[in-house]
Length: 167
Image 1 (cartoon, rainbow, N blue to C red):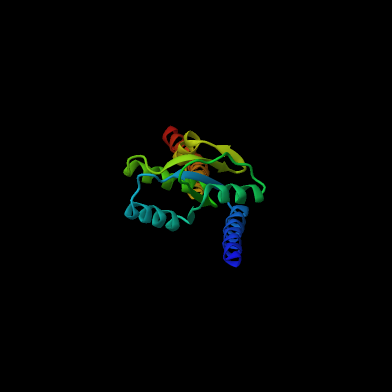
Image 2: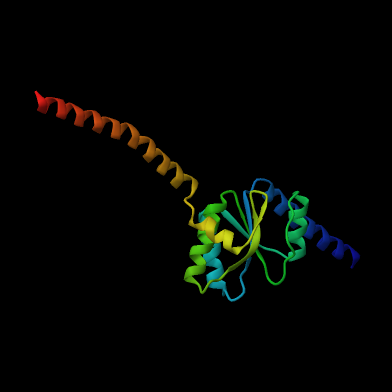
């Protein structure tokens, strides 16, 4: 009987080690309360997150906190059922969570989390969801860079037309 208890303890430690390893390369960690979501909706949420390159883990609060603390981050106390979103791109994860919550009666709700080493709350996660992703931001920036030479070329063309009209 004692061997079985040790196996459970080692299983828990494996979960903690696995989660803390994932946190090492993650940019964001969000805690969600998935109360009120049925199995179909939870499966849909997991699929959307996985498609976006984000991992969703349901784990006991004590184990989640231990994993976060072992990875060198500091987190708040958790109460109730908790799903942990671990993402390399926090903005994408926030967008997926926000979009899914809009479609499903504000479920799951965000309890808080960590973004780039700083504690975040639900309001900040919603702000992150409104930001452009890295790829979107780069394309906006490239558009701005392209507009500068184009505006210069248009100005030169207008000046050329102006000079030709005065002759």
